[in-house]
Length: 337
Ligand code: KG4
Ligand code: ZN
Image 1 (spheres, rainbow, N blue to C red):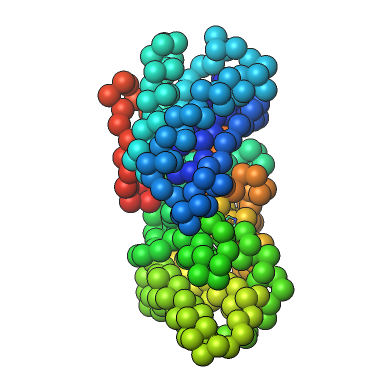
Image 2 (image 1 turned 120 degrees about the horizontal axis):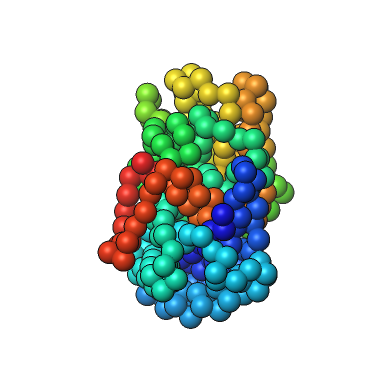
């Protein structure tokens, strides 16, 4: 079957067409328009501007996706769309577009949870990956540890209590003077610095698998402000490397606890921050140590994209999930549940 999918939960508009035949999943088109340059002017995503930019982009991307896939509307079997979680005004653009498309062409409409979809992106590159497995989704808006029971049954066992990992990266980057979103630049800088140069604290969460990054973020920002006030020279690479080291410590501590509790033999690392080279290496080492199979998406499938919505949409479709024209967007939901 062919699925047409739409994503507009944050600052990327993306439209994809993917085919699912006899267990083979193939992306025929995955067209994304990023709004980064627009939001960079403000140092972060401005929700109203995001909504407007999605409206401007979505039709052209849909035409471009059909062109690239070389299929026509009559070939499409179902329409999938991110309906939760995300910025409400942003989500509504793709939700309404998908609803209209499905209604006009008499196609089934499948609502998709964005966090589930980040995990589903991995199925394209690991066709033999089968639930149950353990997943970590780390992005600009979410940091979740998830016990994936089946492609449509998820139990979120840990989440951030305040900032998401990507958000912490972006906020520290901003204080260091980098343009939004600074996550990727922090990654590059950290590679040139000494991770042991500065000891930044991470919140100890005892028995919980939850995360907290706001204390760490504040500690780094205070360090920077104090050094500036004293006129001391800031070694940006050391700050980036030491901050990253503290983030990795928090992640690996929780993964160790999760392994002890759930004893998984396969894990997925997904979401925009899964592009971070240091996180990829640290999680790969953790997996190697415990002989866990690690499934990591390639960089183009880490950030928000339409193809991941089609992949999760396929499984939701098989499980019988459908929406009608009353479908609404839900800005906040608890993880992937
Ligand atoms: O998944 P995503 O595209 O959007 C959300 O669902 O939030 O993730 C975007 C986030 C941003 O915070 C961005 O700075 C971060 O992913 N990011 C990175 C890297 N590449 C993107 N963070 C750290 N290192 C990277 N290499
Ligand atoms: Zn995302």
